[in-house]
Length: 167
Image (tube, rainbow, N blue to C red; front, side, top):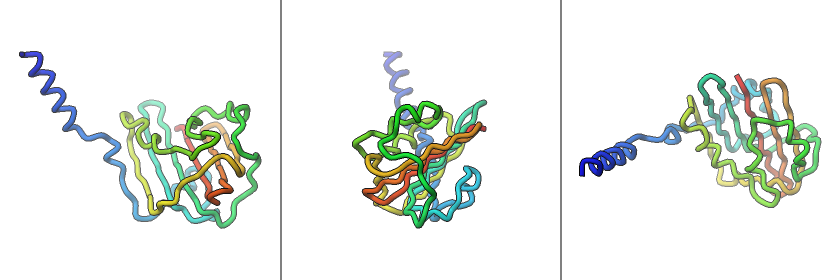
């Protein structure tokens, strides 16, 4: 009986603790200032979705995900689907969300790293943020501390951008 009472107390206590995913700050406008931090410019189009998070203990990372309705954008190097040989040099972006026949599923990104999340916010003013990685173009950019993937979906005419930066 004593053990059952302890277990029940722990279960109830765990349910009272709020998850850090509940602490994602909601923005009314996209954050254009953060684009410079990730080496991006704001002249490519209208941002319809942004998600930012920083997380870690000793090795801190920052992540920015955006969906953009493009005005214009630079030349993207490669044709979709994403070539598995090209992505081998990218170490920090999780490529499991880019399925050959499906929509890019970036929802789990809001759940990952919640136990070590330091800060997060989201701007979401559109219900049309489906981006596919079947037909279109993409580019991969990498330097010592920053990795970026840019995908243009010819079907939806949207751009998916994801950046990860190590501090």
